Length: 549
Image (cartoon, rainbow, N blue to C red; front, side, top):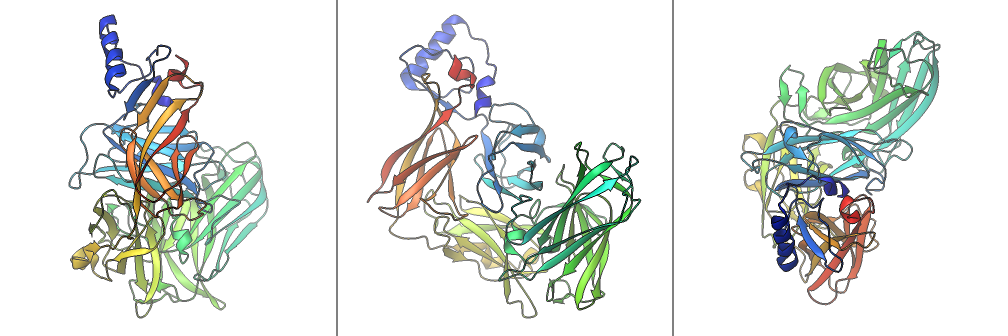
């Protein structure tokens, strides 16, 4: 929030400024620009702040720990409505570096609706992590918070594995020897092992995105993701419902869902920081195909001779683009597919991506006021369509409706979870032909929230670290969970002008309420026997301009 303090404000006459100050002292009226406020000693200025009527907040978290990153995050905002976005400081910036893993996006202009949504793509990257993105559809003024999970190269989550190797390139950028990098995603209780190898031939010339040779000692990092791991699927760049720039049929900007067999991210760089973009000849990525992987198009397990699709992922723009088909072949006792690539990016090996994707709206019945929830999308595959796999898990949702991207090839079920306990509180029932009316009655989900719960009404305020007499009451997202919980589940609620309610609390239980602003500000509290009132305070740093007036 510190950037908000740097906004310029409209010039006031001396009398107008005096009236504005008196108004703040007497009635604590909200103002939009606070950069030039000059407090009088002994007077506390209480300022509401919301830089845009439409906003969304999100967290960039480590995929293994589920904690927000505490290092700088490179952010790029793209999409149809990117030109309307502003930062918390009110600045029109679509590329910037966030100090830590908490993001704010405001939207100028008309408030979006379900029938006229705003569309954004948020692309993020951080040192030591694999880049990722999320596609956002905003349908109201205060939108549900989002989560982007980044995979750390040296601490991968379940279902993901990484391997690094070194090689040498001549002054012209040519590899001096053959190089093979092998990485295997370990088996888990629910997913078999997945082997991947990357083969580079001697004399392959490597160049960066400016056409300059990448020479000297180079390090190649390979990160492999299993499409059979529910944990890995939650880190799939852009999400499994990411639209594609071009599909296998040549159609542009297509909605649908990926059914990945595997995904691999490859980066090669030298000691000077040059990153390889293209090769003079293809390198071969051999992706293993675990036994029993289901093909939703044939309704059978994949077998030798089946065709799979290869899509590339642009880590700078978040674009997915169809590249080519790859054939499944027998390699000893295993199935594999060979993917030939001439430019570096992420690559997904998937079953055929249906061209009939759609956005399906779901409604929640019996929803208590201010109650948040989590939705899970499960697919049932296998010969009898009875093998369950969670494809998507949302962040904390509020309001009585949400949308998921589906297609006609799969058998689905939507499950609603309590965000604090993770317990199931509602199910849609299983359905097929989602884009041809198959969702039907399943699109209304009646939930049974936990009983005997209480609420905590909170006030969130920001103060100056150096003791100056300014208080800011923001419109912001507050997360909460049971104290000491290491669960990835957190409830989230948007506070307006610093006011909001944490719902669904068990009586006499310890909880932690959290605001993320360039770090973590938390309040541990016991819920007590009945509804209560609480305060959470977080701090504006000394270098924030309003705190130095």
